[in-house]
Image (cartoon, rainbow, N blue to C red):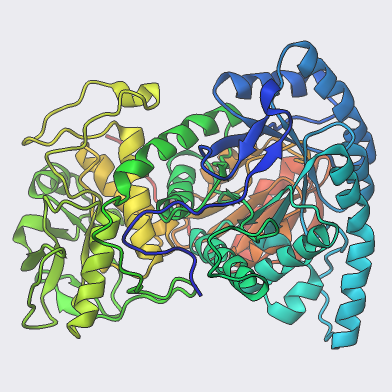
Length: 626
């Protein structure tokens, strides 16, 4: 199976074009050679027409090209008529997506008024009960027949009205039927989506795209890779792969990328950079959304900056077009390496943690400020390492496996390509040397892109010949480069140099490791970005929960506005705080509900009590007065 032509040479996946609305009047064409489209979602109650219109206009003003609005009930779906009419009256023709969960009848109402209907295969025709049941082949076939009966009316109506569909699978809301046959896995997500795609194709409806979202960037990356590989396989099974002409019913449907429940601030941006950026660098993706627990307009500049970085982070030199992968792209497994000493006190490789290396200049600035109990601390100095710096574009020899290796500065390749090539050549030599990853190789480059977001246009500061990126771009670059390689299973230590601030670069390195699931030095939050289904103010509540729990190293807390993805996404979290009803909160341990209908005013403290009951609580350290 293959999801891209080469892990070393950029080639954008050629997806079929689908039409969203009227391209002559604000609509967009997705796929083909068209630029990747930026989209987002409003957060207010869909029944609040004025707020829905204003939030949509605010998104369009910052460059959003598709706007999603939730439709939890038929009544909400019907109000989309009023919202869309008001937008069009105000000369705003941005395509609107109706977000549907649980209620096919809401989809049938929404399709009358909007350009796209998003359906979640996990709950469009199923109610999730976490039931355990073995299905015979005959019973499974009956389930598929039931799903087809529920979904077909929407497909036929979309075909008649020239609408589009997004088949959006979420890791947190797979149906019990899928869970029992395929497990809580990327394969289950793919099969769930393909069931709905087969129904579309049965009725010769092809104006749809896929999405495979997870709050875990590694899972998300595996899902999209596997999806594209499966689509390629279906092409080969049904059509002649030798044909130079793409069959009109090819399976090359467009892909929407996103890390769901990424959170806020730096953490949310890093998770999105790892998941979305890695796939964009491999040529996948036709639309993207960066899901932040912030006001929606904040998402679009991140999308814009991320897209602007991709050409610089990808290799367009066809000399490096090897199709052999140095890693398994469909199953995460850390590259095996021997354990070696970085210095007198720190080891890396083997079963050791992935280590954080800093430059001498950064060490000199941050080391005097490090306290004995601090978790964020430099673990080795780059200039002091026993390090082999290699140009992977040339032949080289390594005499022993206990030598730490890295890519030499100045190599004329983007970092992701260079480190993949290094791992591949070490494998061919039969060597498993530990690898030090860097976020950039051209340390005389890093010029600011004048076409990027305004924050990127700050005057650069020169440090030893290097022109550092603006902080927002340095964060994304490091997240994409190092995060992508970690998701490939490559890397035993990391070095961040693109961020000019010493303390900021050190913390960024640790945040990337946490977002990639490689180390845990602080509380990890899985927080949804809010929408019209949300039953409390997510930004306020998230801040309140963080104020009480952010000292809990190694604890993962999910903060979900409603139950759409809550229970499923919390399978990966220790504790969950979920909106169950207006002003009422349900608390979970993992995916198991423990306490119900807690008044919102009491819920944060009840969450703390639950953490204490499960022996995960420690008292915060009292800070000494300065």
